[in-house]
Length: 439
Image (cartoon, rainbow, N blue to C red; front, side, top):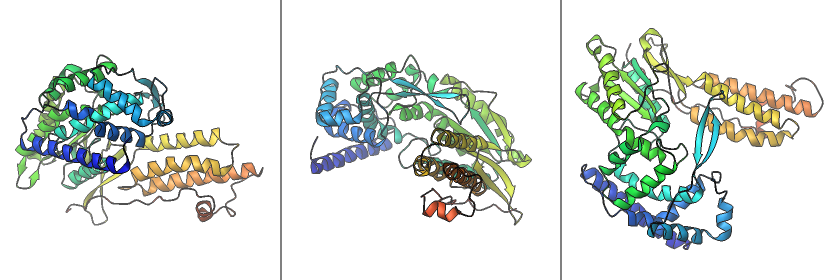
């Protein structure tokens, strides 16, 4: 691969290219881009895609090739071969390796597709060039897997809508969304912005490798494609916001993170028609995409009646503050807490004969990741429960190793577990909900 200075210059050139593409796409919403394939094949694009794949670590694909294998042989030669296949139009992606991941600690599983590293690099290169085009088209309420956008921002958007008295919540569950994306419809949507036969052919190859329909969960380019597919749904919701806007206030708000979508409607009687109109229009847009709605899991929730709804792992409801004003409350969903504890139980059980330091080494990253995600809103009570549970398990592990009964409460204080053993103990909630609205 190139030297460090050359790579830095290449990275800057790529950033400038992406910025230029975005500016052009934003300025001309109907412009169709051509001449993109040459940028996908450039070594600077492939290098950045390789570094992105390496930063995400990840298991090998169906060919068994690891990053260690590639580095041993030389990453430069590896990327040269990919570039030659792309420029020679001989590149064919390998079938992705399938892996089942348990969902929320239950019996259901999510099937992840793990592409070979070579295919991750190609997908990453294509994403680097296509992403700025479609970022210009994506709507404000879409947050999933987009640059400088987070799940926490989507959660905050929902909480703010509740503050604004949008208490009728339309919660539509999309049935197996990623598995049912129709390739021909997706390609038509991409073609509205891309007039480059080589890019379209490469995209067809990538989609075909995943099956007759669907975008594989685990594919590098899949989040971008799934957002492109649902952009028209977002546009419809933006139009609904526009037609119900009076001054700075709109009667409708929405937030979408990939296939997780909620729409909030003002509870005032004059907006009652929206409670039927919005879900009807949503279903019409989704039907055009041949996306099915899971009616059993789809509900309309009235927060004013004390009901609650889930979004991005949080349980939302509306409660009264001490001042008497209404405010949103959002806490980790019970099934998310149960799934975490089950994951930790598995570690304690599998490593019960190992030194406590080894167990802590394994559970700390799990705890840190989970707590960092849920450290917004009103998670303090849930965090206290988890911290007590984990510390009790650790004390029990130590006492069992010493062939002693009990939990050693006096010997192993909370402070000592953290200071001496290094057990994770940063359970602080970082931020609160938006300010409450007037009563």
